[in-house]
Length: 428
Image (cartoon, rainbow, N blue to C red; front, top):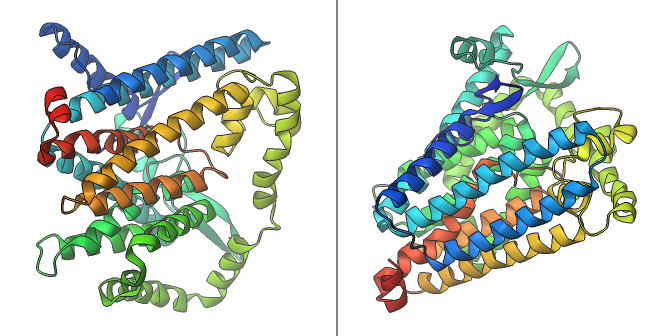
């Protein structure tokens, strides 16, 4: 869990791009299968059984889309995309089945390790920013080269203001927007948990510190997609928490973060004013590119409306428009529609509906169990923010989102047992 977002820790093996999450997820699935085979244990919670049906349905849609491929390059990209999908979804199935049998304490520990990994990633990003600002050095080359994982990288350079470069931290992810959208999850999940703790709870101050630190890292990405996701998630949290969002418990640590930001900005006011103007303008090339991607959908729907052009083939099909061979869709929904068609979109909506249904069960459990209610609202807000951010970026096909989905799917199974639910106990 701790390394699941370290996408830039990667190696090229036999022409394949393999990152550390591919290795750890594959080893987990293998260990899970060996454990179950050794004990001849084939039982699964109903949630995992339903996910297995979705797994098969997605695979079938993608395999049908294979017959729409036209070139060897398309088939190569399809094979890589299908391999990644199989590992990702197999990990989700195994992880939900494993977590569903474990205790509540184990669930909280799993969530903690996931957040800890993101916090380490964010800390690396801020250190990366400090090194670039003070020395102009490349922290990735220094850290990743000794383990053979450095391919290309370093901090993202947004542009120039005068003679000074504008940096956007991407940490151990491949893009600053990836990091920003990933950080939306721990920020929105931890925030209601923090609000739900008693004043003298031993985790209250540490959680406030983690939230403030992650917010600083979020701001360092200069990501509009991350800001959109965070804003949408906070609107969701405003439903149950209302005025508590502007209580002293929130405003005091938020003021501390604002003070740190204000001191930093005051030292280079003109520089940051230009950066802010560039990142809030919708007239720049980046903003137009995200919006224009949706204009590319009608041609693919005319040719292959039901099953799309084939999994992971966006870059080759739209090369004549973008002029680049490695240009991604920069929108999860554009990717789904163009690569798997209307059938794939309908299947995704069904999968999303099932995820929301499981969260609704967790909300009902939360009416009777302390801390489960804020967990349910945090997961719901994080999902809403991620869905919004993925309208203009592409992170929901990454490992971190499958871990998030695992936490959301497994939570109702884990916490219902304490309520004396006979069905939940029988499945356990």
